[in-house]
Length: 312
Image (cartoon, rainbow, N blue to C red; front, side):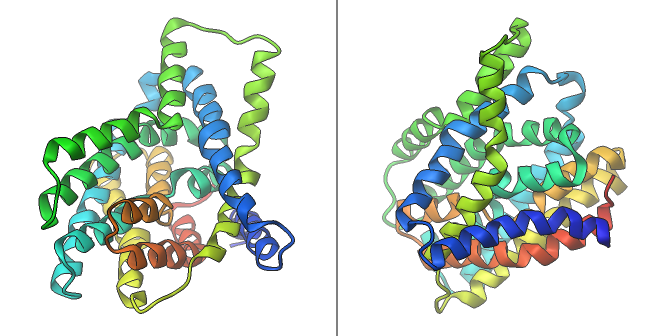
């Protein structure tokens, strides 16, 4: 139990510092968006580039981990839509936003720091093989589903075009692409380029956690908290449970490797759920509350999954 506390507490303590700093006006609210933008647009692409440029792809891209992760994500996407439609009587577009909130993982701002703390740098290569497909595949799927389901939907080709623009302009994707290209091209960075990449990559964990904690001040529980709680439980419990079931009992993936994918699946809902909901102006309250509730509850659920999976 002490080892779990040692992993989880520093991560959530950094988030708490960010939250309290903004809450008591020790750090400007307007600075939070810039800090998160720095993490997503500059620091994390360098981290992804460095990891993929030096990875052994024969072991890193383990489809026995990648496929179960996404099967779990797609399953809770469908469940989230179904529950929103049947239990909460949402309109089609709102139900898609709810499903996306249950599906989309906070892989960068929380996932990477927790994996680093729990399993060290060796876990990150497998995690990045999942992250490589995460935003591009799930956002595209959600946008297509939204356009097919909402009553006032635009033509499908417009949704595909919008998804394409969002994907191509995503700095995380460029970090992945350049890292893979460097790997296959045998590129070796020398000083001071290597030092620059290392320094940028080292900024990810503290800046991401502080920024996310500060961002939580912008979220407020509303009337949709019951629906949001259900989406959060789908994200925190059901999605990693599906991933674990497929990886370990069915596919017999080595436990030491499988737990990287399961723990990543157990991370809370990513901020992109809120971005997606506001982009379509559908289910914004549910998305906002799901981000907040899942992030707070993840202190307990991540500890639970670490207990189940074990810490090296």
